[in-house]
Amino acid sequence: MAIGCVVQRGAMIYIYDEHGQQLGSQSGDALLGYTQSSVSIRQGSMIRIFNERGQQIGSQSA
Image 1 (cartoon, rainbow, N blue to C red):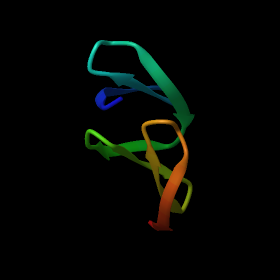
Image 2 (image 1 turned 90 degrees about the vertical axis):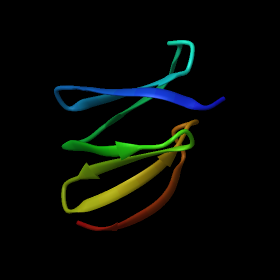
Image 3 (image 1 turned 120 degrees about the horizontal axis):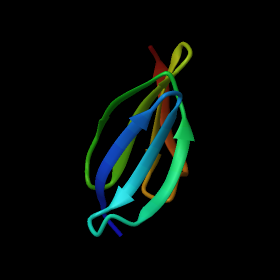
């Protein structure tokens, strides 16, 4: 299922599919961006990249 929309509310980031159904959520300091298949979130001094299932697929120092 592809990511359709990602919304940050406070310290929580919610991931939705193209039909508006919630796929998952992650905590983070800032939503940096997203594509149809990944979400980039700053968590402290790290930038973490998650897939549409909420699994971390990459990271780097901020």
